[in-house]
Image 1 (tube, rainbow, N blue to C red):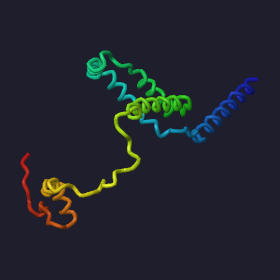
Image 2: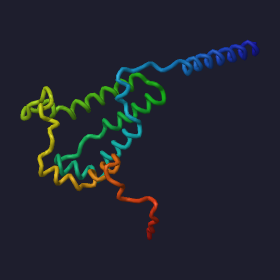
Image 3: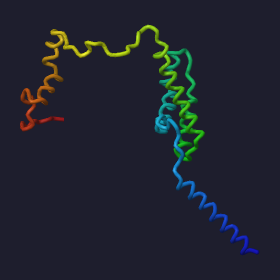
Image 4: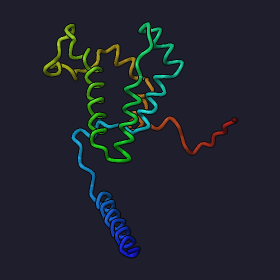
Length: 167
């Protein structure tokens, strides 16, 4: 009798191990918009930044009250659930949160009725600069380095000359 129980336990352990191996061996399901999920440390940093004393003071100064930071904490928890356990529900909640955050950030852009959006760039977008700007640009660091790289002028810094730096 003891042998049959032992065999049953051994067989059930073996079945459990094979099920676990199958779970590990199978690739995780692909989640649509998975690219929106940031690294989990980013959510942790955002939460800690949102709840810091400096941020709370700034929030009170700007908005007259402190902001609710719980969404960052939820996102962090969901991120770790997705990363560690491949929890699809957590991944979908995290993606939905990112979509809402993005929508909220871009809402002023879409609600803008002050500026007319262009359909195409202006026709003369690449015309030369006015003469006074070209004269100002002539001796800028960027222009000099550009000419050096093109070989139009010799390098202004000779690497063969020994220099001494005192620290």
